[in-house]
Length: 484
Image (tube, rainbow, N blue to C red):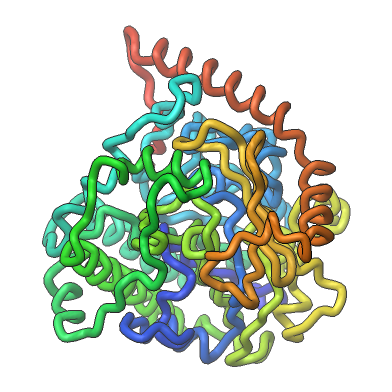
């Protein structure tokens, strides 16, 4: 093993809410393995994704750029093969880069700097998930709450099968790293489907919460007409206007979700124990995060696609005792777009300053090492241009405030210090006019939402045409194949 540069293992969940970790104060969830990493490492309490949906969030994460910059608008958008990712930079710096599991890349390039993938992808690589804003606001049964009507136990399903393959291939790859002589330092991403909906889990994990006091949503559902237009669009897209959940159904979904979180936590434990067994922990940084969160019934909303904290914030725990503080909680705001530059600094990538200067994200390595950085920007930008809405929207979280700008609609402003549940919109409060103007100017100076909307609708139209054409005649799949 190369002792000079650290190995990095990133363990990624899909749709894991920011607070469902026992060591971070959740009253019911069981996460003993992540708890250990919280105790041995650094937790970022205000970490955000840069888009509350899978493909754009992951593309922003690997590229270090905002999704409007790389034009990854939705789950049917293709990340251009000529876009540098931190994985390309790691390879140039001597790292072996391996992916096990989901990354939701669309298009022919299914690697984007990974040297190899040891599993297939769980989603199609085609343009099939492209939304169509020209249809206006429409129901989507495939992402509707009807799928939450029957939560609970499932002993066998494709999502469980997939994640079992991911952890198997991850452990196998760790052993391969250990056996290989003169091994390069490695970056290994082990990325899971759980705890993504639908909320079904095996009886083993379901029974773990049989006697647990499952908390119900803290923020009750209000009338649909009282919601901001963009949340109305998303609620209708999720069929909340035509499908209601009973209290029992809400309780069962939350119970199953907690079981799915514990299932993911067990995968974290398997990976850490294997690194310990093979005496590889001393030179390995372990990171645990998610691509976005889950509303889980808060504000009457489910899934993601909104800027409320349960959907836009993510867990982010980074551990390597001796290199980083132990048990440290960082309150400064960071986001996944910052991880690319951070990883490049931790890996001591050559010419990194030149390349990270072109990124939208910044390295928070000083925050990680020292727990504080007086010069840190303390902000996150989150964009959403996917299915559900009919206008582009951008969120800016900076310090204690969160600002939501929706093209051609009134803004939202929340003080998360006094109103962490985001109930009181301060946009019309004259006492906050200076904050509103500052945040509004920042968004307007950096995002031309009219131009972005034109790009979105043109991109959708083109991809829908291409997808339709590729379904005609001989079909060629872009899905990743595993070499035997």
